[in-house]
Image (cartoon, rainbow, N blue to C red; front, side, top):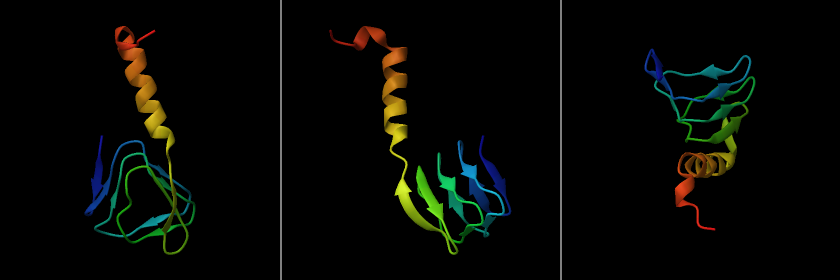
Length: 82
């Protein structure tokens, strides 16, 4: 599900902290984290962690790569070579 309200686009699995402000015409990518009290005035990349006023990227959440790999292995166990 994608929430679009007033030209703000928020993709799936996004976490937005308390009192965070998202300005109009901003896109927050899938799996991104927005810190509490952040002022988001630019687009946020998928799986990015942003915080501050104005919001700046502090790091990229790399756990999504591991999660997708494990999901692939669990759904297709016959593809695993032993």
